[in-house]
Length: 79
Image (cartoon, rainbow, N blue to C red; front, side, top):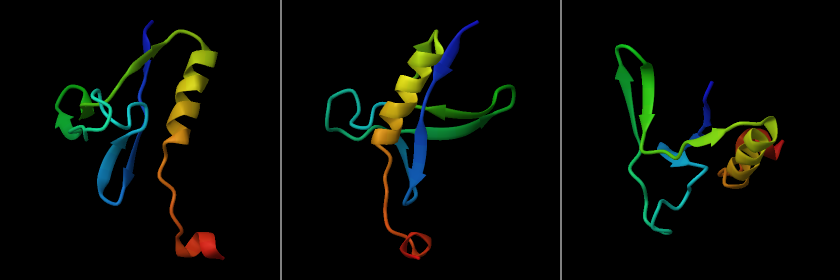
């Protein structure tokens, strides 16, 4: 069994790869695509996928992704 982890967010109508936020070159913006495949369903392309073997490895991926999440004030946060 192979488990791969990816972590994306949609923020201000942009899709961000939270496991590789700056792209392979360091500062360039990656092109991320979302499409529907008749066999696989929704497929997100152009994102980093990390193969994980243990729960601890998965948690490290999630922690890394959380660190790169966009946060902004909303009306709900202000209350």
